[in-house]
Image: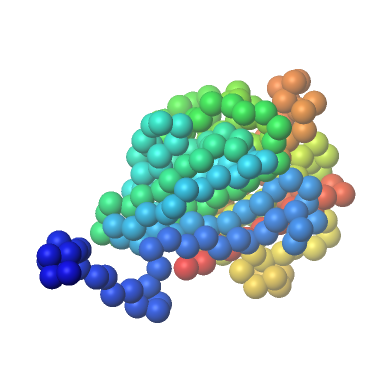
Length: 251
C-alpha cells in the first residue's frame, strides 16, 4: 500500500468557480424563429482543454475572438489566431486546447447539413489582404471569410467592420437565407423592418459612435449554392419570413 501511495500522482484542488472549458448556447432553432442556425460560445481556460466535441447532424464554423487555441480535427492540428475561422465538417469529432496564459474565446456557429466536406481554415491576416475577398462599401468593410466558393452545405460567414455613426440601413430582404449578426466590438445597431433594434439593450438608439465589428453568418439554400448567387454580406439584417437574430457578445 505504501508503495502504491508513493507512486501516485498528487491530487489537484478544483475550486467551485473554476472552469477548464465552457459552452454557452445563445440560440438554436428551438429557441429562435430560425430553421437551421445555432450559435454559442466556447471558453477555454489558460492551459485548459475540452473533451471530444461532435455535432452529429450539423456542420460548424469556429471564430477565434481571443487567445490562440489549437483545434485537433481530422488528424490535423489547426492553430487559430485572432479572427481566424475554421470549418468543421458534418459529424466530425474535434478537440480544443489552450496552451497560452490567457483565456481563449471562440464563437461556434452550426447549421443542419447532410453532406460531409473537407475542413477549411481561413486565416484572417491573409483574407484581409486579398482584394477578391474584401468589399469596401459605404463606411463599412466586409471580409468574406467563408463564401460560396468554399465547400459546405449551408454555412456562409464573414466579418463586417462599421465606421462610427454607421448602421445597416435601409432594411432589405434576403429571401434565400437566414442569418445571425454577432457584435464582437462596439454597440452596433441593425435595421429590421420598420423597427431599429439595438443589440445591446433591445431599444432603439442612435447609430454607434465608435466603430463596431460583427460576425455575420447565414444558412444558404441549395439553389443558392448551385447558382453561385449570394447577397452581399454584412449589409443588413434579413426581413423575410424567417427572423434575423442579433447578439451582443459580452464577457
